[in-house]
Length: 170
Image (tube, rainbow, N blue to C red; front, side, top):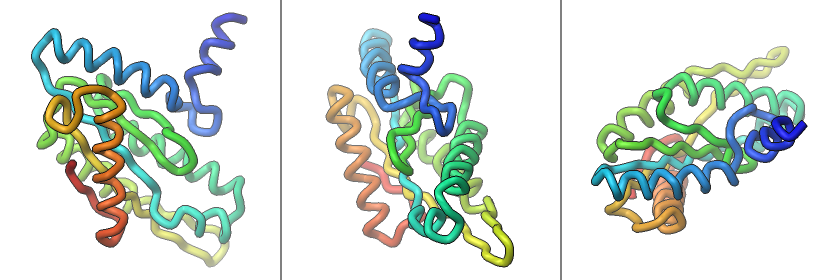
């Protein structure tokens, strides 16, 4: 029973990915490790583009299925050591330990391509998915978890403002 409760406290129900609380705890812990090991770390903040259209055209049940599928696609695009989370709503986040921003950029390009290749079809209606991604690196873009998330978030919104479905570095 404790195991079930503990799992529910760190896992997002809709996607099966880790949740925001776990993301922050893991990030804080990894930053401590990176400091003691003298290594870099990157995070990605991702937001589905025009996700409201999926819910409007296909309904919320299909929207939830799409979120789960996007989560799976993201997970397949990263390494086992990377931690993928549903940050909330249609946002995802990844912690990439021992990873500089250049390597994170390569991984994010893979994610962008994979999400763009997804096809959402219901009857005659087709939708292509897009995702905007912001990347921040430790220690250069923030000295703690909160600063790092804020930097990645600013980069994400720059990607949105620049036309969506793209990647921006902090």
